[in-house]
Amino acid sequence: LKELGHETVCGQTVSDLIDLLGLPDFLDGIVASARGFICNALSLQVSVVDQPQALQGYFDTLRQLIAKLKELGHDTVCGQTVSELIDLLGLPDLLDGIVATDRGFICSALSDRLQVRDDAQP
Image (cartoon, rainbow, N blue to C red; front, side, top):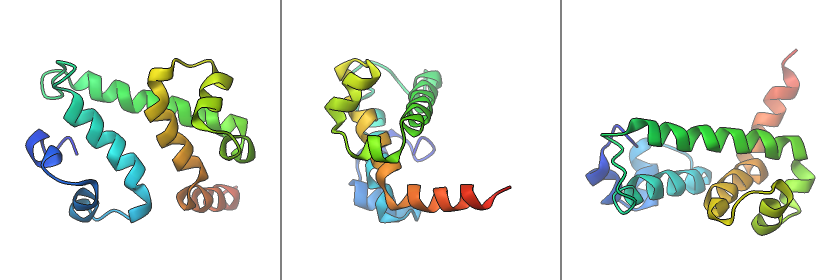
């Protein structure tokens, strides 16, 4: 999305971006979160072009939370609401969007496919 640029990303719907990038529909939550981050960067007075570390920080946080949620396990994560997970992990409420994205990733069909692949590797 970063390579597409602010105007292109923010001028498209999530569905349009998924089609443009050739991604499967079940990644809509992740694309929506990334699009929201890029498009809301101006309201936060953070320019992704001027401060690419801000975007990298977002993705680092995304990966760290996925790792924490994986430690909790599929049943725990998918059996809790986003608010309950935030409380369980002791996170601030402002991370609800990223926790929702990560929860969606863990509880989605993509997670099931990755789990099968992980189990098959020695």
